[in-house]
Amino acid sequence: NHARHSNEFICAYRQGWDEDHLRRLQLFADFKQALLSDEICLFFQPKVDPLSRENLGAEALIRWIHPEFGFVNPEEFIAVIESAGQIHLLTRWVLRTAVHQVSQLQALGTDLTMSVNLSALDLLEDDFPEYIQRLLRESQLPASSFCLEITESAIMQEAERSLKNLERLHAMGLLISIDDYGTGYSSLSQMKSLPVSELKIDKSFVLELETNQEDRQIVRSTIELGHTLGLKVTAEGVETAGARDWLINHGCDILQGYFYSKPLPAHDFSRWVQDYLHEEAQ
Ligand code: C2E
Ligand code: MG
Ligand code: MG
Ligand code: MG
Image (cartoon, rainbow, N blue to C red; front, side, top):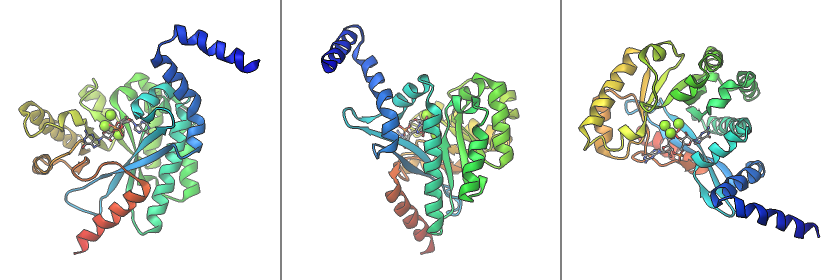
């Protein structure tokens, strides 16, 4: 009887709601359990300093293979979880998992800087810096092993509150990166006052670097701007040797993209790192 009722309930809603809405509901309903299972995991993509193998970094990127929907784009489910007010659960899971990965690599003798993406809402949580502080204390890892990637628009949404937390995180010794740079609207004066250490050029300017004169101009002046502000400049979406060479010639500090490696599961990533560091020794 109960089953019949709940079927009727679902049918009633199915008529009024489109498939998209149902999919979002399903994702939301499944997400907490998925975090505890291995449906959700972190992949890692190297951030390479073309001039020194010692300066290795990685970006943690979340992946969800849903039993019904298969691969779900992170931007899709992150939006769902954000609008349900649950993003702190995801972010904290990502941070814990990233810390774990850094500890494991350290045990293999590898030091690297791990970047984690934040949502705008994370910076509005007053106890967010304390949470990170606690994770660092428990893991005994230095704050400088972690970089937080956040978009300009995320910072500017509630600039005063976000900035307060950013300042605290920066003061703790974490690196801060402006992600997807060039797609937002921050002014030069705003950029100047941010406690950041890295400017990450959005891949939309990098993917067609070799054929698009306009993109080259934008990237060239962004590298200059970043250096003027004393920041490291990273390019994401480096897919070809041509783009890599152009970026190196124009002083881009850190490169990330399929040319070096796609995002990899933890085990494959640590193998990639061992190979990468081993090549140098030869
Ligand atoms: P993002 O932080 O700007 O990450 C860069 C995206 O570019 C990633 O997509 C990455 O897989 C992709 N990418 C890297 N190299 C290349 C390349 O050479 N060519 C191309 N075409 N793409 C490349 P992904 O993993 O689908 O993530 C999309 C976005 O989802 C991220 O953009 C980030 O905003 C968000 N995201 C991913 N993981 C997390 C997370 O753990 N927390 C939060 N809050 N957001 C996340
Ligand atoms: Mg990022
Ligand atoms: Mg980006
Ligand atoms: Mg992005």
